[in-house]
Length: 124
Image: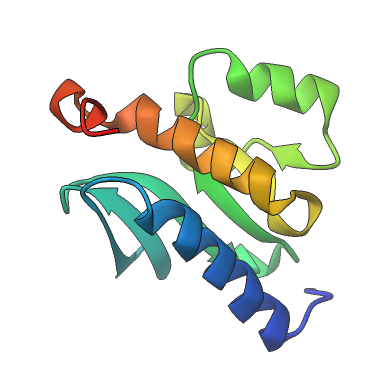
């Protein structure tokens, strides 16, 4: 059961939107039951999850560079987790209430860099 309010959800989604939509050629749309962020309307790099399948988490699932998931799970298991469905591809789950704005921006930017094609990366 989730231990946060709808105001918490809105605040975290606002933070996430600011970080994701500041990146070039990104957009937001509903996908997989929640807000997701895409590059060129095609490639998802971050998904916002609010109590997904009653897991009690206010979190994101995001693309991550090779090896990052294993490192984060080992060093900071209170803040990061292996998400279902996409975890086997190296994606990282992040508890949003445990990261600062600066950390969230860095995580989202790294997810973007992991997924974006070279032509989009040159726009950064």
